Length: 230
Figure 1 (cartoon, rainbow, N blue to C red):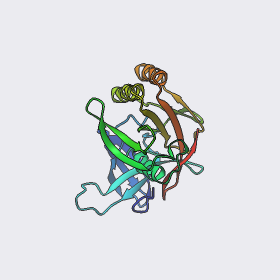
Figure 2 (cartoon, one colour; figure 1 turned 60 degrees about the vertical axis):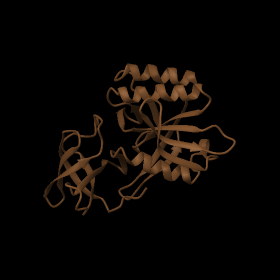
Figure 3 (cartoon, helix red, strand yellow; figure 1 turned 60 degrees about the horizontal axis):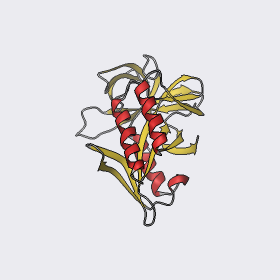
Figure 4 (tube, rainbow, N blue to C red; figure 1 turned 90 degrees about the horizontal axis):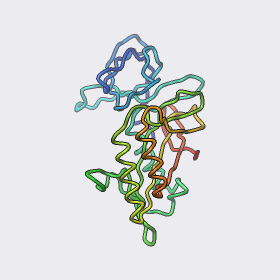
């Protein structure tokens, strides 16, 4: 998934009200950017962090910049926009790039299911069980090389695991796909100390037959694409 407009480097001044970030551009100008991430962003939102913003000239948008990346240096980045994983994965699904799901030709996003929920993707193919795919963006890293999820308590995430388990028990394929939106990690684990209830729901979901997929991403200031499996 290529960014619509070229990103520009900036320095984070502060993140506040979850969805707002004051930033300083390279020419010294201070701007407010939209932060499309409702999570805690632990370790990613410290003042002085080098970041990348996407400018826009859309008259319908109040803010003229969107925060897209954290720059860790050494060519490593974290994608902080939580809408990106679904966009990148839809491209990958339709191109047959996810080997475990490559046999499915029809890809439908945001399909209603469960208890007032929407599954991120419903994949269908004649002769195969329907595949319900829930996607989670992984950006937390508290140890070098280790990505973790979640970065805060997520009752919604626990509900998603329970609903996937219910789909698996009725004979459908149910997949929990963790997309690691950072390039400096080669391992993945649950942050059970942050949300024990989520970790317990994960264990029960696996026992019910929910499949777990973990994919890395390739990230540059030009694009974010789905990478190899962990």
